[in-house]
Image 1: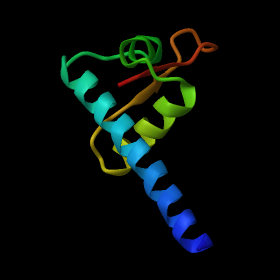
Image 2: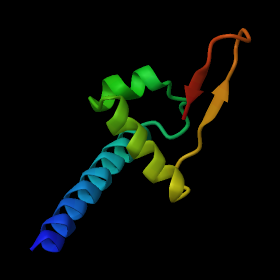
Image 3: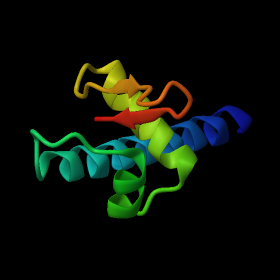
Image 4: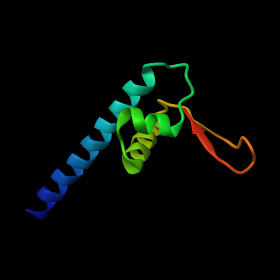
Length: 81
């Protein structure tokens, strides 16, 4: 019984990651040549930090997105997609 519950929970969590990755993919595809900043993506998708991080990780794992870390003034970090 415990294994079935655990299996269902894992499937739910995995489906949640797929859903968020799909939302992110569709959002980024609205302007494929734009370099998006994290704040723009969070606002546009409505995801919190953890949801966005998991979606980015999922898409990066499948080589679906590229991102870069910039240091414009040597202190601040900007992530763009």
